[in-house]
Picture 1: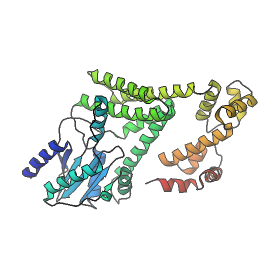
Picture 2: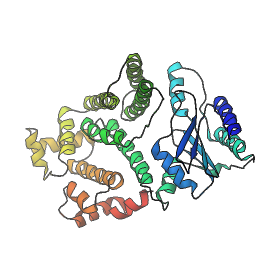
Picture 3: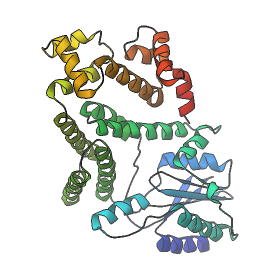
Picture 4: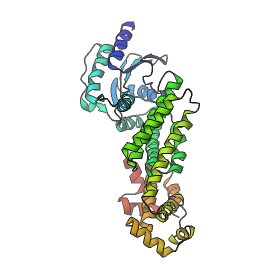
Length: 372
């Protein structure tokens, strides 16, 4: 065992991969990694333990090209984990030309990793590498005592929901989702030193917000300038007491910038109309109530809205109800009846007919077809 650990230590140094040895019987972890390299979260560890009961080895990677591979030998579980996302972001800040680790490179590193442990060369075809969605699907369907696969699924979708709020410039929605996103432990511990871990988490969160803001209409140059400013300020801090609140404020800042841009591109009346619809989607009865809240005539509001957006107010309302319905079907466990009520439908059957007319499938079919 000492020889394997020595070899894996050299492997970790030469490849910049973090290595973990988990004793399945004693539930103890040995870490072979440099300070500042990524930790493996408890949630992901539970996945791998459950998955290893079916397979002796496997590889997973995320859309952000973070790779993880493991091999089981007796009661020991050997895990290697890349830190590609963090390195690639630093490479942007340094303006260098460091290339990202790709699946082919990791596959060869993983083969060497397995050889050091098993003394056998194994073939790892491209199809053996599963995407993050495949990973979620695989673990979610396992007959396991753990509820972790559901947490992984929930964390992934909650992240998408949170970033969509930034992209839309919806500050209220972002602040509603963000505490739950952080409570799921999506980032984990990013360094052995507490302050360094908090700063790394700030970098990771800011990177996500930056990409969402660009998608929402913020010029890339301005978004990355704001990102650099936030990161540089965090790097200078000698203490970050509440990293969750600190990163929430950064996300809120990006969402506000996107909202400001969207306001600039629309007449005030139209923007306020859309905001009213977003905030009262479940209770809107007619266009007259919107016009009254904005102190204008119904006919003028309808004409101006159609002329500006090239769609009627009712079309916009139905579009938002459809999108919100799709979001709740994917991101929540609410019953279809509860979703119907939250969207202002008196009966579930009304929502189902409305949804099927737009999507050519029922709400239940939509949820079943898109969940892992």
